[in-house]
Amino acid sequence: MKLLELSIWEDGYTMPLVCYYREEEDIYELVDGYHRYLVMKTSVRIYKRENGLLPVTVINKDISNRMASTIRHNRARGMHSLELMTGIVAELSKSGMSDSWIMRNIGMDKNELLRFKQISGLAELFRDRSFGLSDDWLEE
Image 1 (cartoon, one colour):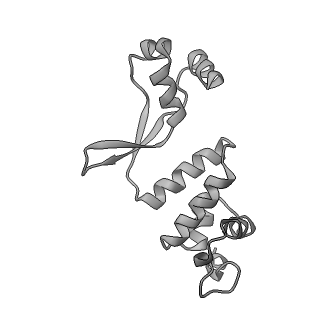
Image 2 (image 1 turned 135 degrees about the vertical axis):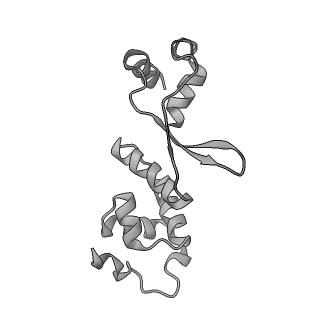
């Protein structure tokens, strides 16, 4: 966090936070940028300089696409956790996203997706199926 604070102090906020507006609660949900947000909340000098304001972009996507956005942002920065990615792949699969959708939107190849599915150890990911990927990725 100290390095991020220094980076923001020296260079400013070079990337906006990504939020989703939850109309039913009239709040903005943070999709990407938690640590940049935390720096604003904990660094007095940055808070003062920025007047407590952060650059934000708002996306209008369903939960699966918001998860995909978060992963793309983290992977683009080279920051993704094996445990987190495994859980997200499992969640996307359980929510009905096809293998090709996951590969396209998360930026995975078929072997990487298969490894995450295998690591998850969740039998329901392979229930009533042969152990492997579906053929829907062949379309692309």
